[in-house]
Image 1 (spheres, rainbow, N blue to C red):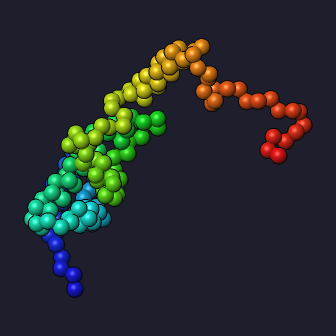
Image 2 (cartoon, rainbow, N blue to C red):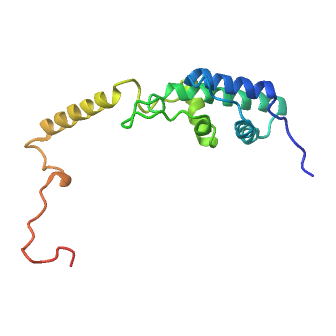
Length: 162
């Protein structure tokens, strides 16, 4: 029989859920048994070696950070091409990778992929400026990139795949 480690307390689980609900604005969301189980699974994954009390505190802190970290990602909060929010509780706590990513955002250890509202358009404009600058610098001094060359002409009636 395997010894069980520390468990996530009901108060900790409720506090994590409440933090997620407040950070994302999902005030009508319910803390269901399924969501509680998802937290328990992620909590158990985060406990590894070390003093059990310290590991349990760190694991709970990681989950709490992830709960609020999703709100620091403009992409997840709807600043994406589809204008869809990807901030569900189930997404945040889907697996260890999601927990780590959102916790890092909350702690300022990672930069959100899309930093601010309107950044999709700003990003496109920035990309266009950079491409224009690079092309202006390289005109006449280097051949164009292969992707920019026109396709070679194909003789009529021949299958180009043969």
